[in-house]
Length: 250
Image (cartoon, rainbow, N blue to C red; front, side, top):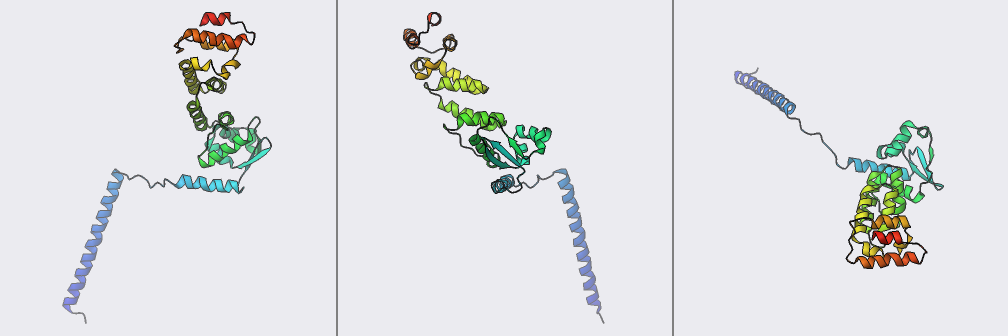
């Protein structure tokens, strides 16, 4: 038979457990209320996107779940429409609205195959090497696919390459592809280094009108205008070009 002391002890334990549970419930309710008034930010895995793209790139190289082949110069590049559409406005429009959305082979006319390969690698890896050898094919291809970050990287690269021997060509290239910042930088460089530029071979490729356009600027930085006058006349005289109007502009 249970003693009176044991009965009292048992009831005390029950009361303690009940009180503890009530305290826990009250604490939980307060915590919920506090969380409601000041929400904590969600857990975010900073590496999640990188890992996902790394896996998709591996799958692309193994031709797993690829649903489109991009073709340039007869070279085929496997890819996933979803990835292309997410990263390129050009492909987004193509696969959402146009007839190509139903096709699994897309021929990109006028696209350099090496540039296409580099750009699709970039879409999956977020990395691309811009070099002297590939920048002239890479920039127009990036323009076409509307990969503006790659285009801007190409423009930054060309800005760093500006030199009296190539600035005229870079300016023409920037103008052709509507790279306005690069164009402005090249024109400013030409104005600052004009006396050196007229001594370079690239200057000889300019037309009469192009030379007039250059020397009509009042921002040209030249320390010896007579030297520039002579440099302007000599190369074009050998080509049989009459530069009376040019001389009047100097």
